Image (cartoon, rainbow over all chains, first blue to last red):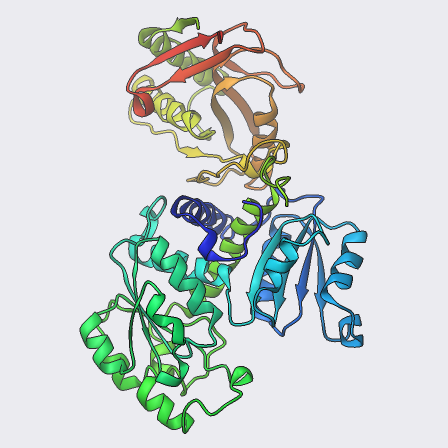
Length: 320
Length: 178
């Protein structure tokens, strides 16, 4: 695997190999010595043009546990705020000698541009680009589902027959897009629920079912997993719904709606949560909630992704 | 293509039984003993050795684990990406006598990686190495304490270890290519 830009590029076998390696990384993360020498001597730049706490820290933990040297680059306070272009920023960093780039960018497609440019010649991992993709989030979500559903016998398994309902701001959600492609590859069925204003117009071409009424959707689809998306106030440039209270009532996982779910239904959220808006505290803090597991699993999955992208001859040198 | 069989099922069983006796002799019994196999076939062999030890010293069960060394290898950039295997160490290694078990000893680089991996898991009193076949061509100052069979072989030959649990048959053969 040369880069990790999109879950669309992953084959079923690649995805399962990555999840299996993540299982072994999860074991390492439970040890006293949480460190492996696999990326010793390699320098990785975390290039974050957009705010992020948990994803950046998760990548940083994963990189350090694989013994890589880590350089954190945040656009705020850098020459980017003086108008330096992505190309110049990256070439400056490349001149210092780096072996891999983890990039988050507000523009959809920025990681793809970087990976397919001749600016640098190192692997690129997409840590979220605009409203396009967030592949490591989808992989950690799939990993979390697989662990909850198959337990210790997870290795080698896909998500055949698992039904996943994703609720919320699908239109702006890179998490939803990456999940749709990956879950589809892994054999799960996906249902998307959103207000009509927050449903992408291209939805008919996606390999999913979709609905606008959450109660009807849950009753008819009977999901094994309900994934609530964050209402991204920073991307809400227009009035997509009349009032937050109305959104919470219609599309939030309220205490009442949560109580109506079977007790084995998993409740997921990529974080950070707006409690009382898309998810109630009763749901978020229940044993069915996987929110904190998702965070812990994120480190294991990112270790697996970094390992697969940054080691291995023949694949890493296969550029342009 | 010429393939020579060098160990039959009965030879293999005999070699493993002898290794089990040698382990008991050097350790003066089964106390503090832990067998750690290197995936995949090393783990299977470690389980077999534990079974034999149980028949020699009835009423005892030597703990068996697996030790994946993938992330500790020194050739990660020279090979296609290797997948990992589970590491499972059932007991504390502090103060234990660990016997590493692998199917074939060749360059010694896997064992080097295993010794590094062990360091991250605990501090055994003693670490020993048992292999079913030693084919020579060491690249590091490493030797086995217990050897099923010495198989002098050329660099371009392949040693294939077949075990019932994986391949349906117990057999070791040398494949000398074309």
